[in-house]
Image 1: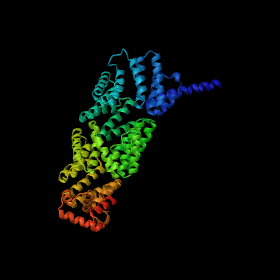
Image 2: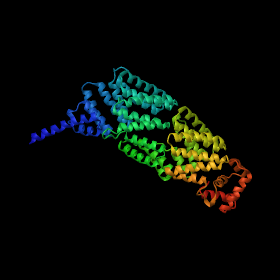
Image 3: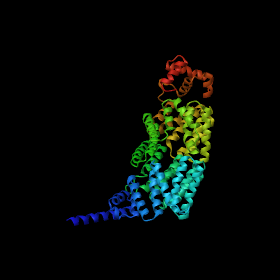
Image 4: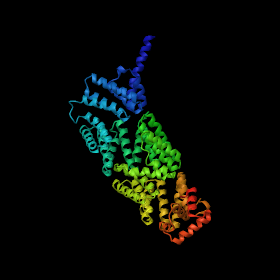
Length: 551
């Protein structure tokens, strides 16, 4: 009986090895990890240990992955195969560096490089270690040195026909070009890297990381067309891989970002919740911060300011910058001074073109709300220049919207119409219904300032319907208020405009100039306001405006 049990156990162990190898060939990562982990360790070759490491990494079992690659490292070292051992050290360093254990990762990088002593400078493994150096230089902000390092990765990859190195080199160089404002060139390199991925030439771990790097680069510059196409490609790549956990969080967060851009807010929340859970399961704590920030952006649009601020604060707790979204939430609460202080800091802080482009739309909105038309114009002009150099549709729309806001703040409604209309048409073209409706509200205000009340009411009605369909209650209420529906005490939209300026302390002549009205017309509106609201002084009118959220 004992011998029978031993034979059965041996057969089972042998079966696990064969089943594990078969699962690796099928990209059934969970099966592969489970079978190879249960196989007889003495029967596993260094290649099997490497396969176990790959499978474990892809199902987010980092400890098993590192342990497997360490076993491969030990076997290769004992066999006198330093180059193979160096590649094992590379993967161990990769896990530690991408999960924040930089000192441990650096130690394995140094260990791997020592094993390559005597190998030529363009030896294939050196390309992988150059990737670690690339990220170190990027983190340090040394873009020229990082660019040279990325070029070296690409050269080594092309020399050896290594698709992992070629695709990484293309993406690294491409994103650096984008960061330095050479967006068209950078996107061209990302497009080239995409061909490597779609041809199936790149290994699984490299593929997932490169997909995510490319999509993130597009999201940073609001290139939603590429972002949508490549997120679909990443989703298709993930779906057939059994038990895959790593990279599925990125899929979900990018789908959430696209849904938010298209105004599908409830669906976006579902994807972002999924992303948060998967990032947490994957051990990627900083990435959870990104998903939480995106959640805050959606909740702010839906009018859940408590939920939005909580999400922004949680994002900050995970090391993710909560601005400028948090400033816009403060502005929505009426905390204009706090919002102004934050966006002024953001405006004054030095940053690269991509970071500036991400900040400036919110900066303009807050500066306009705070009455600083001069600073708002400067920020809008900077954004226009960046959008022109980037050539991305959604950013071009944001720049046009910002320019329109600045023109309205300066008292030039005629000059606001052209950029606002361009923004509206562009947003419609990319499927951004919420943003398109926002543009229509500002177009309506420009019409109203020019005396074309009927056109203004028509634009507001369309915007109000869109906000209602999208479920964005704050924007719907604002459109209704501007249209004159639901205003207190029978006030008209024009009377509310006059009352708002009274609350700001402006005189009748100043109000007349701001609204392009005659002094007598302002006086008549003010008389109507006093009669409808029962106030008897400008001070009481200002108090009434604040009490009824009309200021």
